[in-house]
Image (cartoon, rainbow, N blue to C red):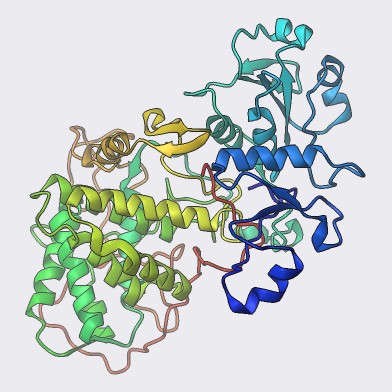
Length: 544
């Protein structure tokens, strides 16, 4: 996270291939840690960090101490780490274009202010300075009574105390990164303003509350996973067909959908159970997955793709990967809430593993998920542990992707849940962020509850019911608009496969006899790789 001011590197001196380079650097035992100041030229320029039993916090402090001892020129990529004076604070906005100035008031032996300054190095429109408790003019001006404590100054002269749950580095850093107008900076070499297409930007973003789930996101992800990703191969057979059947069966069992969607999934599941041929052609599957609005109990999974909580600042950000993660978090929680804890603990996780392996469009992402699953998934011994496994490994993915090309600058990939959603989930141990796992489980069970699913922006039910206001949770009483028009038959247009943003129109009738159309073109759908594990210039682990 401190790049480009500090870059970490490691070398395995137990590997025979590294014998010469380790000898050149004077390594006679390990672990050995050395610090190279800016402009170092020779192996012997390294300064040995002498405490072999140092904690992560001790190492951070040693790095900062060595940074501050630079004798020649100050490292060009390093922010100011010395204490700020009253004069510097008074004239800061006259001399800088930043939107915010964060001040961390602390004792002289504290490293918190300098750590936060380095944590925020990659972020634009904000500067961080430490102020010592001995700087009486500033302490009195801001009414500081405890150390450390953080304050935020704006260009208009106003200021406020940072509203954090704990006065600690990770809480300050998280809050500052979520401020309006704060984005990761130009170190993203592949993302330049000139390369962005205006048509790719989301002109009218939908309003979303991060504390809520949205049925529009869930149904959009279901539609895309079933009708686009799983329907990409020309036919399903063997392990691929088994994985698809298992995915649908798990959705029937645990997905808390609207009645029309539950009927859709149950109908598809029954149809798949009756399919006994070794191979399932795509044309047959696509026919079977069409909507039936004319039944006494409509069988409908909306084809309109609408991202709300999963909407990105540009069309190629977030969307489907966000929705799919949300579905599987929801399924792990519902499985834990609706069955014996020790019975079939891997039911949902194994379903996700098979789906990602056989259908997820990003090959590299699928390979990485498979590696994570192979490493530790079999150790999950209960349904509650399955909730935590998926949560912790989703955070591992976020940490890997933070700062990469696929990260939405408006929605940085931080560790989740953040302190403002679940303050009791976070703690610090010896200066290092840690999770309070019992609190995390409690939060996840509440967050991924059917009562937290909201119907804002979802397609209306296919049958007339009472009118319902916006912001209504799934299952809450209320009324809903009647559909004032019939739906046209859902059509498959040759050469125009459906992708998010190009919704098809739902059909009124689902045939009881599925016929093959030999003339139907089997064109593959293009997948926009939204969550690629592409090479990243700066991989940071947020709040680690």
